[in-house]
Amino acid sequence: MSLDYRTAVLHAPKTPIVTETVTARDLRPHDVLVRIKAAGLCHTDLEVIEGQLRYPMPIVLGHEAAGIVEAVGREAQGVGVGDHVILSWNPHCGHCFYCDRDLPILCETYLREGPKAVAFDGAPTARLKSGGDVRQLMFLGAFGEYGIVHDHQAIPVPKELPFDRACLIGCGVMTGVGAALNVAHVGYGDTVMVVGCGAVGLSAVQGARLAGAGDIIAVDLDPAKLVLAESVGATFCIDARRDDPVALTKQRTGGRGADVVLEAAGNAKGFGLSVEAVRPGGEVVWLGKTDVENDVAFRWGALMAEKRIRRSSYGGARPARDFPLLARAYLDGTLKLDELITRRIALDDINAGFAALKSGEAIRSVVMF
Ligand SMILES: [Zn+2]
Ligand SMILES: [Zn+2]
Image: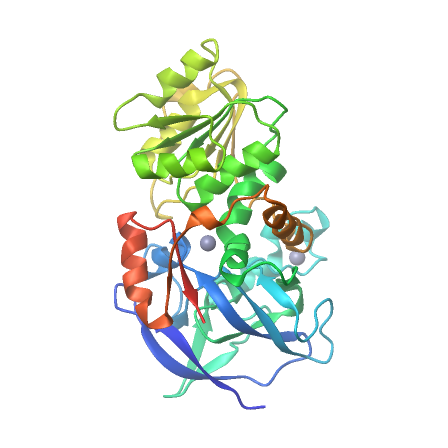
């Protein structure tokens, strides 16, 4: 097999992404070749472009994708040619210290190979036509016509699910919905505050709703995003440019604060207010991210009274279990995904797409193939 395909390559931080032809490696036993149909532009990709996350280059970004299985290696399991799949960026070995403790996000092989930006077997899957290996972000590198992944990264989902919506489940939706369903302990009727209403925050609002929360308070600086939050299930919206989210939340909860706060803004204000706004004994889950070298501060007194803070990166994802559930929830009408897509773009428009993500103008732009 010799397969050439078009892909979007980043050669150095803070430079434009360029479209180039690459050659795929011959399929190894556990490889799955996926024809990418849709890939979302996520903030983590942007962090690599901006140099906040450091990876070897040249690299193909893109880690929120869906497509059709075109070929499988001779030992690939769980997936077959023609399957529609959502891709997971958290391959895990299944038998290390953390996998044995049900923490696949901390899998030792995943953590060892991740910074190299290669496939899960430790080697790159494509070479530039002009010579040299090209890296792939988060074991995927999905901004291309094809991608080669390890078999358990390709999760079959129902074929009725449109690809542009399917891809969102692979990162932003899993992260937000999963934080409420798998990570936080949201009780029936609880008050949940969600800080930041981008793709992850809008998904966290929906996770809270699916978990049975009562009052779902959405906080953002952009009124347009609050309108979206309301359309996916928020019961009360706070424009933080105008009103004080902590004071208003306490007012609605007898002076106590929210039972659970899901922070999805990833800025100093968001981290600080999440700890202030949660009630004594309540739980804060930080989903948002800032530069890895940044310090994060909050008022020490705000943490008193047995409050808990927890970090979640992928919503406690077990992709083989969760992706089909989320796909089904969309098809049933209980999970809303159409609202998250701001625009559909071509691969050649990817730089403009990232500019729109950076300015906050787009929730999700999706590259369509
Ligand atoms: Zn992402
Ligand atoms: Zn492992």
